[in-house]
Image 1 (tube, helix red, strand yellow):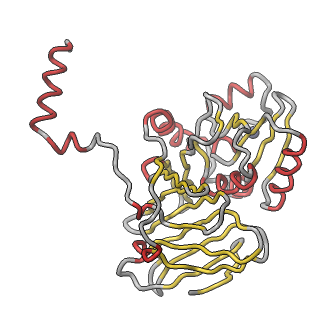
Image 2 (tube, rainbow, N blue to C red):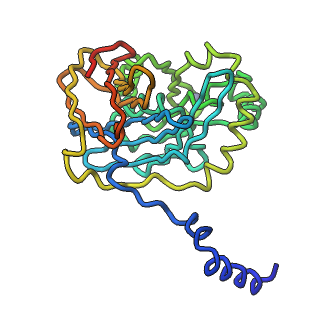
Image 3 (cartoon, helix red, strand yellow):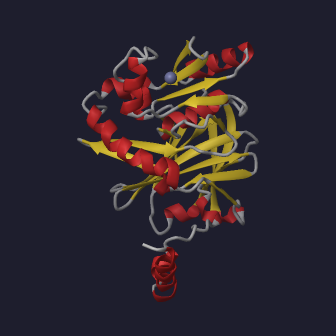
Length: 304
Ligand SMILES: [Zn+2]
């Protein structure tokens, strides 16, 4: 099609069909997208998983007073026999990510990785998600000895350019969270891995799963929006305060449900021992009476 025809076509779209045009607008984010606030000066990351008409997820990073949102359309998910894998696009601009890295990872692992990195955002992220094609190439070149890899499923993450002290701190933090920590010689790097899911579900983590994910990766890694910096809340009145007593380092999970239905869950950042205060956005509970169950490392610690 010639360029004149194309411009003509564009004009028709712009003037005759406003709704088609609206789809191309970048959505605006209201403060209610800040679904949780931690009253602390550290970095916290949280996954909101809503259960209504299927499952929808948003991811939020709170870094001091800034909030970074990865909305639901930047996720990839795959389900098989009731098991579900979800992958978060993590291209946050405060991270130092090598150009060719495919920026997808399972959100539960990313929450832990941010704790392991511990604010050292100068560290270089050299590998995350891998396609089957890449894995096969690594095998042929002898860089990887395995046909399958947790990298294929967003369950591994590589970091380099660290000092000895940084390495030891990351090793300790990985151990606390039960992550596998390996240091590899080739382009010296640290490999962090959450192997349990991958090893325990061989019927889910298959080549077919890779193929489905890979089909989505190509498009989603390049095209979709970057995370958005959003304004925090207008008022604490919009939030429900929750006090937490943390007695061991771990991941906090908040589940909101009634006797009949689970409405949503928030998997929060890693918390260290002490008294903590968090705020949950009230819009989430709109008109749905229920109660909060709070878990630390999958153990119920409070009911509100
Ligand atoms: Zn690795």
